Image (cartoon, rainbow, N blue to C red; front, side, top):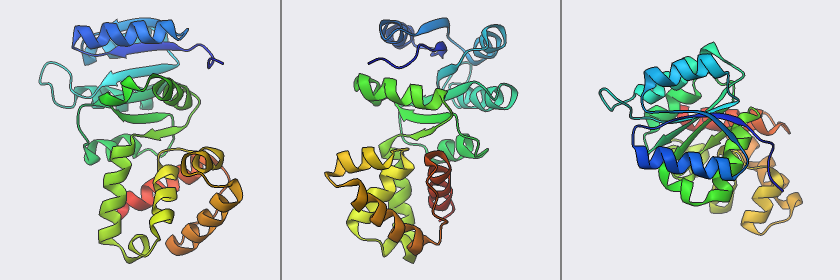
Length: 221
């Protein structure tokens, strides 16, 4: 079953990747209302089309540094109903921190290699468009590893609890965590309760709020 069709703007300076993304999204039933090659054109396209979602590379002309990220931040501020997914070639924790700084959801930070897992990639885009926060597993792994070494609380979690914590930070529901780790949902709830107690976080059944709480905890560690 396909997710609801989205109106999407793509920003990617490499023509082959940009065209490939467009074909992938259109094949999935989405409407690519604009496909552009730089951050300036991205902002203009969003203002003109008011899309549900923006998918942009971080590195864009003219400097090929963080123009895509800056454009994404500006779009989220000016168009809060538009979700943004930023694609990166490498893990950059500082970029993830900037993207998540507003704490409002509707954002995603994914490595470009995730595009090859088409089903998961499309699911992540749909999640961001509905207000969720999605982080690439490698980004989360870096954050959990750093927090494990920096704080006694995360370091004292069991290996299984750290696995659950990472999946929460990626935006997974209890049912999804249970399926990935071959656990019952009851067992996941028990792990989450112990994690909350260990980290001093308030228990919250809302997936978006708990993702934000865990991410900010890891980022501040």
